[in-house]
Length: 126
Image (cartoon, rainbow, N blue to C red):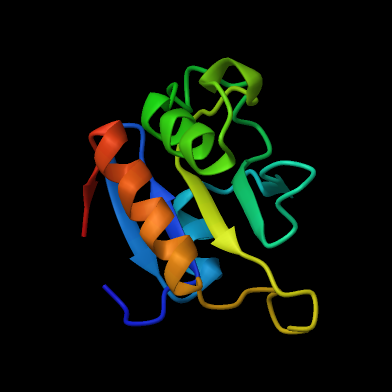
């Protein structure tokens, strides 16, 4: 685990990995490309990423209830109000001023919130 993670990658089996290079997380999502979106309209500092094809290729990308639970907890929403999560899903800290990859380190409060959400979802973080 890095001391200054910019993302948490949540796998469908509940494994979760902190990392400091978003390209590593995107590679874990497969070769189909990635889609990025805001966690909520109000969460301009946090974004999520999963495979562009996750929703249309369920045979390749299994449901990810762990990611759904973590994202709902962090967003403060019931799980049913978020999009379906399939395959590996990354939650990452966004900085529009970073021209390289748009990431930044999680703040202490963001990281603490994510850690609580991971525990509540039953994830094993490493």
